[in-house]
Image (cartoon, rainbow, N blue to C red; front, side):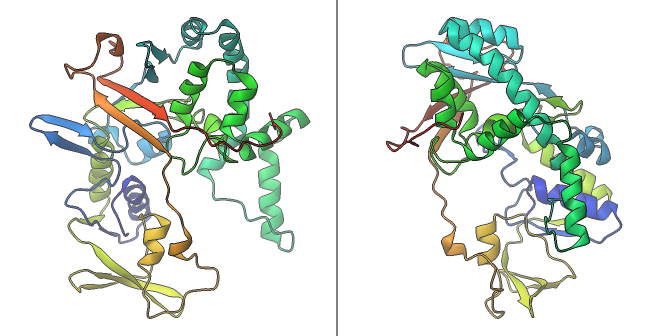
Length: 365
């Protein structure tokens, strides 16, 4: 396994649980990837990248006995707080009626719309939920497996109405900017949604496909599989990967830190192992990569010609459009209005970048 991020550690543990011999190679001197807790100042340890646990599946928590290895989470409430230039700080409470009352201070119409939209989004999100614990379908009507996958997918949508199909397609292909312009009038309410849905996207809110974030955040997670769950991790996000690493070691996973992989050795179309930066060669029947696709394919051995369908790393753009900062609310520089007794010490200061000037000519929502 190339990389010891949370996905790599999870995969390694399950493979070891199935009886395979697994070696994890991590470039840094700590495991975790983007899911780490690090000291940024003497005595101040924070989650430096990933900061909230949302879709950590209950199956993973149970199967790998993460609670036995120290994992503890408490629900985020409010889920997010957004401060505005006029000094107004708006919390997004997990209790819908409480959130509605807060939004009503900004726009009574938008507060009522919020409840209607939330009902619609929660129902649509439930159709997507089952796919997160299944392999992606391979729809091919020329094979038996293709037809089997097609039927399997069809069963998940049994009972869906034609109107819901239309809405689901709109969310899968439409833009977040369109959706907000069509449903809400207040710029503050729109900013709330942008702050909670645009981060992690490599593009602006008017790009097709950005509306899916609205459904993504309503998928289930946490120990009790709550819809739309997001949790603060005691000890920071690094507690998740520390628990995963400890679980993996108990199952027989071998983890080597400070072991950067120079390239993946590919011969005759198959990965044969890896070569570390110090020249060490490690043979393996299977090589998995926890690195991002661009870095993974750039590490492919140049000695073997690429498959015609292999993506070219240089063609994969990485252009962030959104800046988000998480600050410890214990800091004396934060205004009292930005603190919450139940926010577990964190507040998100979010400012979306200006929306693109070019907008779709017609709304799909």
